[in-house]
Amino acid sequence: MIAMCDHMIKVLKQEQVDDDSKKEYCAMQMDQFDDNKKATERSLSDSELAITNAEEGISTLSEEIKALVDGIKELDKSIVIATEQRKDEKAENKALMASDTAAKELLKWAKNRLNIVCRTRRYCRHWYRTVGADILTQTYSERARYTTATT
Image (cartoon, rainbow, N blue to C red):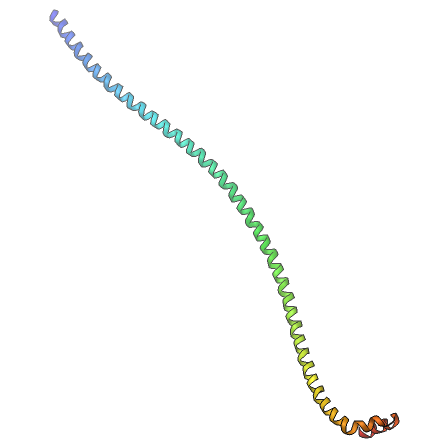
């Protein structure tokens, strides 16, 4: 029986050594799991912070996009107004150019008429020197007879 007890003590000591090594292995595994858990919690916290920052960024960008869209709409309105204004100015300019062209044509006509008159006046001065002096000395009735006779 003593031998059996010694053998039992020996087996128990061996089991204790195995249990101690398993305990160390389990403690190491628990430390690794704790480290992994802490790393995962940190990663989760960082992810939540990144998500919060991204949501804030999205809301900020949404507001900026809305402001830009409103600005674009205002620009479109101003472009429509400017286009209408330019169309009106073009019509006015076209009318002005037409009236300028008509005025130029009128000036050309007047210039031609003046040239004709000037040429005629030169002729008239010559005519006055020769025939006109006699007419001025005649009476009205004589002038009337002279003009009817010459025509």
